Amino acid sequence: MDSKFIYKDFTYKRDEFDNVPPVVPRWLFHLQLNIKPVIRKIHDELDLQTTASLKKEITGWLKQVKDKVQEEKQQAIEREALILNRCEELQS
Image 1 (cartoon, rainbow, N blue to C red):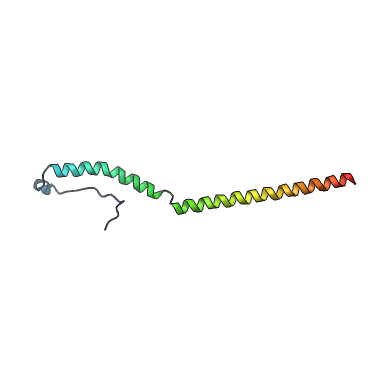
Image 2: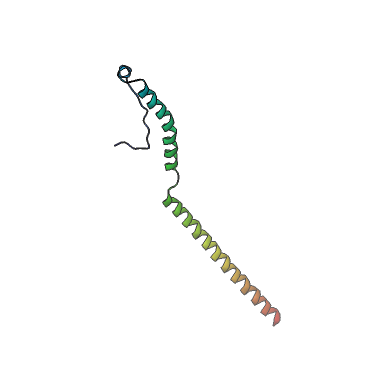
């Protein structure tokens, strides 16, 4: 079975057209013209990010944010300790 997201144009042979009522090929051609852009849009959407890739990306961002927050907390603790040491030096 072919992929539903790969659209193949409707074709017919010239001599087959005589054996089919005119409304059927016209209907198929109109359907083809309307369905082809929809299939193209669906195919483009499938090429976008998946839920798994989005989850992986967001998890990475969260880890970066947590690491940055932890680093800033550590720097704040170090600054506070430095300020306390200088205050003690000035008092003695």
